[in-house]
Amino acid sequence: MDIAGGMIDVARQRYCMANTTFQVADAENLPFADSSIDGVFSSMALQWCRPLDKVLAELFRVMKPGAGGTLAIMAQGSLKELNLSWQRLGECAHINTFEPQATMYQAACRAGFRCSATQQRFISWHKDIFAVLHSIKDIGASVLINSGGRTLSRRQLQQLQACYSDSFAQPEGLPLSYEVVFLRIQK
Image: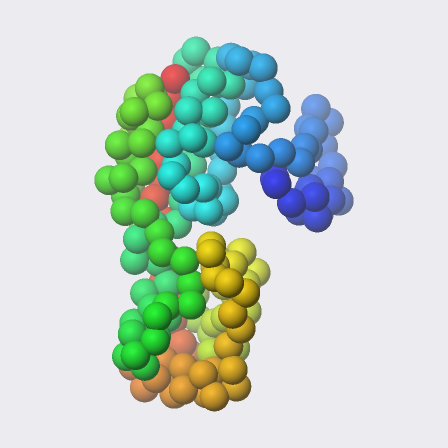
């Protein structure tokens, strides 16, 4: 399930399996009957749903008693190198912020789930700021909620490249950190 039809098309092409269906739908308004789902898995999609309470209430509604799942959600501290570079340039961040692990855990408990949460850092490496920004775009993180459609100027990109490189460059390239919470839920 994905809100983007294009992602569903890609999934159908890559994962053509028996007993598997793909559906365009909104995680905050699931088109499934109450207590009809055996389990759930979400990877790097639910951080865009604010607050997380509505999605978790929907998951609780559609999951069968005893059903479980794992939700991998980008958390506070993700993209820290980029955020710090923007701050050092005296600019507001041009990316979204993410919720802390405790907020996600509390939302799952409020929805009625038994749950546990762990957090892990992942680092990707890139040759320049353009590769960093492209990698963020690839996961949808470059879409700012309430951004007003602003784009970055060439000058801003050059300044960002210099600041990011000066602060974070390593022999492997430019790092980009992702803090991911693995929220395990059971109804």
